[in-house]
Amino acid sequence: MAAARGGAERYFTRWYKPDVKGRPCEDFCVLQHSNRICVITLAEAHPLLQSGKTIKSINYQISANCSRLQNKVSGKSKRVRLFDLGAQFLTELAPLCRISSSDGEEYTIYSCIRGRLIEVNENILSNPAILQEKPSTEGYIAVVLPKFEESKSVTQGLLTQKEYEEVLLKRLNSSS
Image 1 (spheres, helix red, strand yellow):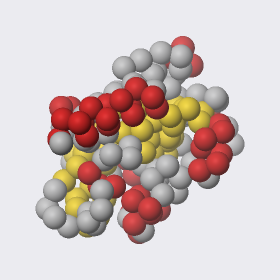
Image 2: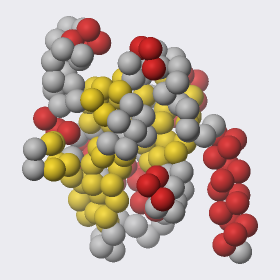
Image 3: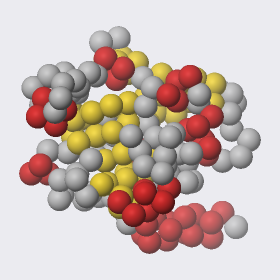
C-alpha cells in the first residue's frame, strides 16, 4: 500500500510525532497522502531503526479482546464500507502493535492520528527485516483514514520535516 520512496516524496507529506508517551526517541512518522489516507511508519530516529537492533517479534494483538489483524474492511469500495463494516476506530494514542527486539526491549507502536484502521501490514510478520530496511515503503505499520471533517486538523500536534530535524539536532547537541 505504501508507495516507493520517490512516490512517497511526491505524493505524501511527512509528519512526525517525537517522544510518544514521553519515551525518548520513540518517534513515529505519518505519511499523509493528498487523498487523506495516512501511512504510519517508524521515524528515522526510532530505536528499532538504529544499528545493532534486531526485531524478534511483531504482535498486532493489543489485548485479549483486540487484535488489529481482525480489522477487516472489504467490498468494492472500502471507503464507503469502512465506516459500516468492521474498521476499527483509532485515537492518537491507540496502540497498533508491539515489537520486541533481540535485546529484550519492547516497543509499542501508536497510531498518532485519529481515524479508521484500513489495514495493517501483515508482510512484516513474516519478514520483520523490511520494517528496518524500508520503513517508509514496504515496512510500514498500518494505513489509517481520518474522518473527512478531521482530515485538515489530523496533523495538529505533529511536526513538519523541518521541525523534526530541529528536534533531532537538539537531541544531538544535548548528548554531546
